[in-house]
Length: 123
Image (cartoon, rainbow, N blue to C red; front, side, top):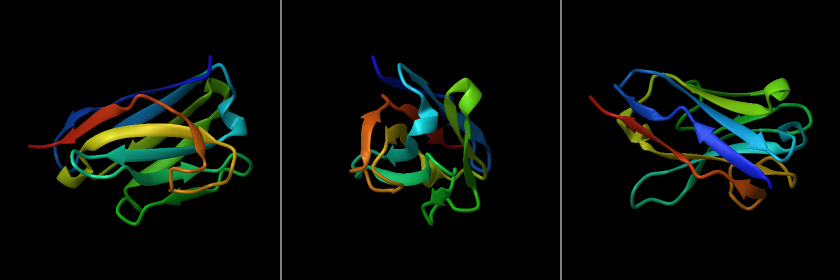
């Protein structure tokens, strides 16, 4: 059974940091482009970052560039999203997704999705 599981979310103060993990079971993440998305209440799901399957090229939304870093550890079959200088507007449920149809911050190339992890940035 193919499964993605996110972890690492929580409550953090503005300016703080969190590292999200996306662990796979049933398949090898190295063969997939992995995207990170988020969805705040009442808003559409938006792409945050992705890392390509072949050469590890990374992409970021303008709203997080310079603050978030995506990386992969193929030995652990896990992808990470390091989030620094967090802002209240980063509050959302964060999802990871896996796909083979190209690198994008749109949702359509991704076939497998995790259940999400809540990130709340508040003082």
